[in-house]
Image (cartoon, rainbow, N blue to C red; front, side, top):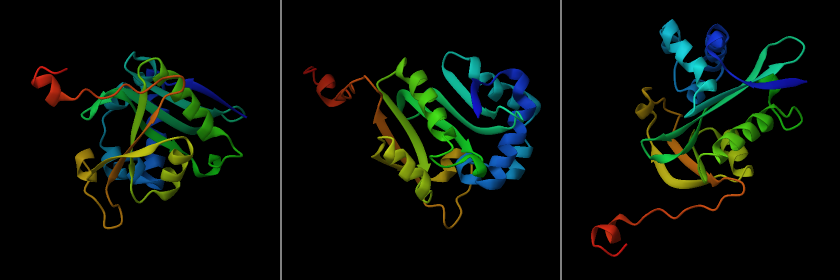
Length: 192
């Protein structure tokens, strides 16, 4: 059994250890090497841990009820350089907690959907093109590629030969209709 809860500033040491594990297991999903992760100062970890209690971000952790060990984490924020919609970020589930039968990933994802649903109509994410299991999971959860692809260097990490790029995916949030993007050319000409 496990429990979900938002992170808080006091979690910074556990968050740091968890992200070091993430960077060791799958640096592409964390978009940082172990060396880069180890260089983040304490105030950087405190800021990341506070995201669970901020109005424009969320950070949800799944903890094992028996041991208290962190099993998984998902974060989201309102907007990025590509637009104001909620964006799923910081996804990591430990290898032993992965799989549909465990339920950790789905429970975290459902919590993110609830948070994002109060702030937008669409949830977006960026996933490495080479991360086939993650892409299959997101497709199963209703995400589809938007057509935007970016280089991993955008996230401050030099790409590796097998990385490919980052693929943006999005999905309509439950109970919400996607608002059409405004056509700026018609607005500029006075037709909007």
